[in-house]
Image (cartoon, rainbow, N blue to C red; front, side):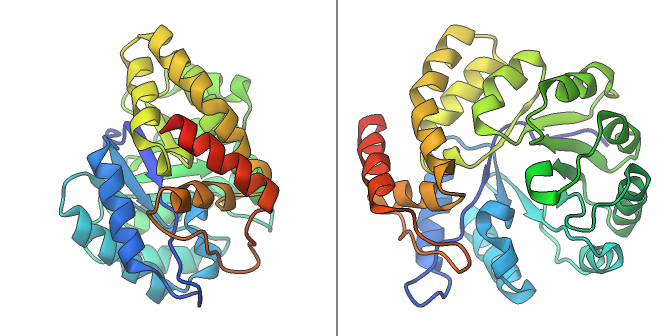
Amino acid sequence: MKNTFKGTGVALVTPFNADGSIDFQGLERLVNYQIDNGTDFLVVQGTTGESPTLDMGEKLEILDAVRRVNNDRIQVVFGVGGNNTMAVAKTLSQLPSGIDGILSVSPYYNKPTQNGIVEHYKILADSTDLPIILYNVPGRTGSNVLASTTLKLAEIDNIVAVKEASGNMGQIMEILRQRPDGFGVLSGDDALTLPMIACGAEGVISVVANAFPKRFNEMVHAALEGDLKKARTAHYDLLPVTDMFFEEGNPGGVKVSLEVQGIMKQNMRLPLFPVSSALYSRIEAETKRIL
């Protein structure tokens, strides 16, 4: 099975009302905003979607709403991960039809060995026929998926790509150098997307593109087409706001920009908390400048 997830994927935020309920109207506006501005595929219920604060019923409601609005226009990837291997496998085996792929983070908190990570993903791969994108984000999980481990997992037929957010370009280049034909590498760090594509990656699963899909997509596709001058211009144009979005945690920053644009409110569920008024003002000004 070859990777088909390329270009700009967006890790969709979850809009909330003031009372903490899901804002489905805001979600509809967000999905249409992405598709209308060239996003290549959507990722529903990654960490940026505040998945730790949503139960499975809510996650499936969000998935259903995204699929309805999307209406098969672009691919939809669903985030299903956890540190209880058999529970994740059971969830995968019971998912509804109409999903194009799965994003599954490496097990967090319990810090498995590399052998444990391999066996975890083997069981997940046996639990579904859907293509699986591995997700390596040591800053959140507490353990790094080594290049050798990713390359071993890349030999499994329905493990088709990795979202790499280790920030370790040496590790990422080792995967790119040795990966089998058809296995994709996607950036998990917005600020490293351009250098990763320059080294051979196929795209990104982005936070920043929630707010600036057109500009971010211009950067990604210029880089993929080898127009590094155009890609660099967009990259450096977006770099200050990229830093701002993560300054007080994700997705607080990007939700401010979406609120400024009238797409949704910045509400989040605890333990996440809105950004400071000073950062809000800076993001507001930068959003207006970019738009």
